[in-house]
Picture 1 (cartoon, helix red, strand yellow):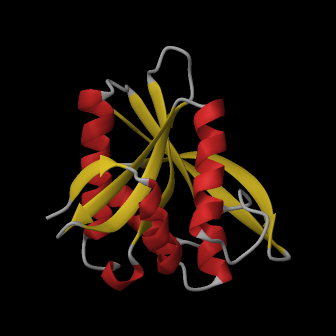
Picture 2 (spheres, rainbow, N blue to C red):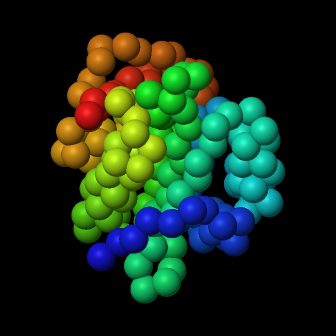
Length: 165
């Protein structure tokens, strides 16, 4: 059973080990980092910058006192009604075991019940079918919006998903 808590800088040491190759890394972070591989310090530096720019809420899911999943939330409007999830990831050793669905379920509960968000959005690359299916399984709907990214000398489409209270 997973539990959710605020992110700690030490969590980055776990997160960077869950990313085993550059394709997975880019599916997770798009173009937010300049290079691969990254270090825990790189993650924390980016998060420190995000904390200055956004209403930024990084969270960690854990079981047995060890991080097993992570994402961040940030409000995208001044009324704090719309929240965006980003950098959603689960320990690669635990993928396919329901951890992603549980992480999202806990995070949506936190977003809707504690933060009082009315809508949650996220983006997922169309070449990341397992993540897309996981998001759909907890109720996210495809809005039909697409954004193009040029990643690893390829054009990737990012699908916009949302779920409302």
